[in-house]
Amino acid sequence: MRLLPPRDDVFYELFTEMTELLVRASDLLLGLVDAAPDDVSALAAELKRLETECDSVVGRTINCLDESAEPPFARDDITHLIKSLDDIMDWIERFANRFVMYHAWIDDQGRRQILELAQVVKHSCVKVGDAVGCLKKQRRQVDGHCVAIHKFETQGDTIHHRALQQGVGRVGSSLDEIRSALAQARDERARTPEQNLDLLERVVGLVEMAFRFNNLRELLKSLERASDASDTVAVTLRRMVMNNA
Image (cartoon, rainbow, N blue to C red):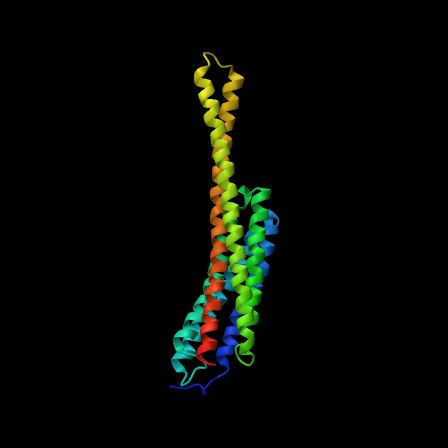
């Protein structure tokens, strides 16, 4: 079996290749959120292609570990890093799949919330790339980038929770209004057809609002998980640097 030279640079090259794919994916992610309806499927397909490339990088990294006599970091750390990087891509691609199905049912407010969280994912991917780029010769700078990644993850959590709170509040308020209208209807001996139609339209509106919120919740969850995966990468990078100080 061919053994790679000790401390072979191939691992740094693979890490860099992976983070470059992530940055490209995060750019496509922002474009996807703002895309015209006719362009959504094509952009999602491109994200799928990048996800497949990431899987290839993971496979090549594992193969190199099997062949390497002395990798630059602990084998477990390298495995955990490359798979955590792949997790970021997997969640971005999962978002894209769902966005193809749900985008027509997302209103302007929901799109703004998605875009805000997608921007956090973009910034996180860029910082992950910066941190990985410092592994070889500038390890003291890795920690600063990891701190920034953690801040973005916290920001993403805040955006996610605020969006969910607002959505639950809107659905709850609409439900309360319908309950009040139903109670009033029971107290009245006679209701006009117009009043009945108005109540029915309120019920239909509530169902539609709940459907939109459920779709939005799924999309935001995928982006929030991508942000969480970036933070996992930061934790792994810090451990790698500490163990090789």
